Every structure is written in C-alpha cells, then in structure tokens.
Image (cartoon, helix red, strand yellow):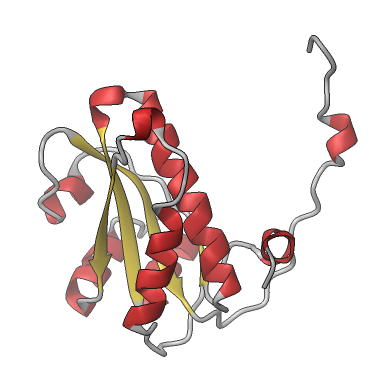
Length: 166
C-alpha cells in the first residue's frame, strides 16, 4: 500500500478479532516507527508489548468509565505501550508521537487497526514497571479490525491554511 492510501484508509479501530498478530508484522511496524524524525536524534521511545490476557484486562479496567476504550483494550490481541524518555519534555513527547504516527500508518498498510489512547497518572507506569525518567505517550490496542467505522469527515485543508500570519 502506498503512503497516501494508508493515510486515507487509517481510522481509529476500537474492536478487534482475536486472531494474533504475527511477530514479524509487529517487528515490521515497530521498525517503521523508529524511522520517525526525533529530537536531537536521541530516539527517546521505548516499546512495551502486552500479550498477557490478565495484564490486558487489568489495563482495560483503568478505562472502565470509557466503554469504547475498555472494549478496544479487552478485544485487542496486542497492546502496545509507547514510552519516552522525559528529559527533553515536550520534545520527547513530540518525538514519540512522530513514531506513533509511523506505527499507525504501517499497521494500516499491514491490514491492522489501532487507536491511540493517552495516559495520565502513575497507575499504568506502576503496572508496567516503567522506570523514573520515562512517561507513557500512548497505549495502543492493535489487531485485525472487527468493525468498519465510518471515517470522520475532515475540515478542508484550505480552511486551515494561513499565509505569513494567522
């Protein structure tokens, strides 16, 4: 799939088939992520792959009040947690999100779906033994889609362009 097609096809998926994602596919999409531009070329990102069903369910329970997110985390055969070194502050987070976007597009190209869920607070960090100096950029359930949601209509880019000043 070429890049513009992946960009057009990518959408947030919140319900997955139970079929596992092959290890080589996971490696391929993570490699795509690591090709992202990043602050000072420090590659601040780290990845935690969660396939343990009990741990996935515990993570899903942290989203009990947000049913679509809980369902996504419960049904995905894989949860990817993208962390980043926080010594660079917002630059580290921005680098993590360029990596995440590459992962989302690569997953789409591989026929996978995902959604990016943000995380605040220390509960996930504690559950996953994330060391001091690192923060969670996103929690990403990943798998083969078991839904076909409509793609949201986007505001035309012409309405978002400003020349020389806002």
